[in-house]
Length: 320
Image (cartoon, rainbow, N blue to C red):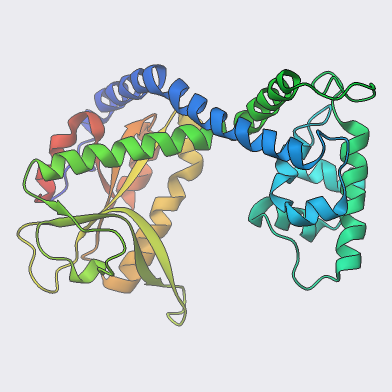
């Protein structure tokens, strides 16, 4: 039985309440989530500055040992450099720079001499464009003081966090949403499966749940399989051997534009699950934030139902 996907007359009111709920959470908790990340990022930046002699000694050997500091170095220039801009200015290997950014590693098949030559190109640009208004000790005889280094690290950390502000907020919101589901389920006698115990989604005992569980699906053609992560997997108390659990994706959004860009993600997961396990798959959303009628209509057309966080008791209508 559909819970919300077949009730468009309620969507407008629910959207308004969901937006209010998200905004209230954002005002109260998002700044703290951002600050917590910024504190750790500042420590990471200070470590990067120490490794580079406070940007006075950027050498290939150091970058080879610490490829993970490249984003910090990019944010230390004036102006800060995007990945592609750094590649364009330095002429460094595209694949190497992107591997350093995405995996914090260097190419394994490239000769050491070739790696060092590419790293030297990066180091040259960073040293040439290092921001003198942040790193005030550059070009003077006196070394940097602890206060100056900390101040500079804080500024660079702000730049780094600003570049990934949305993921920081989204991750904090997802943790909170899963905590709300956990509280609701445990209050009704459900128990969480311990992480790492090897439990499989299709062998869960009745009355149990798990978070971020991998579910194998077959790709187009039915030959290759991959695991897709599902935020919440719940086996109802009425579940019997052979039954599939309920799947829920925790989704939050701080504006309407991004939700419409991302709405195909859920449809793809639903299609993969149905193709692998049949039409009886129950894949649903747990929503908080800016999800308008266009988004809801798209998901409803795909057979995807949802629970609004401000009406979390609707979970019971799914048989929980």
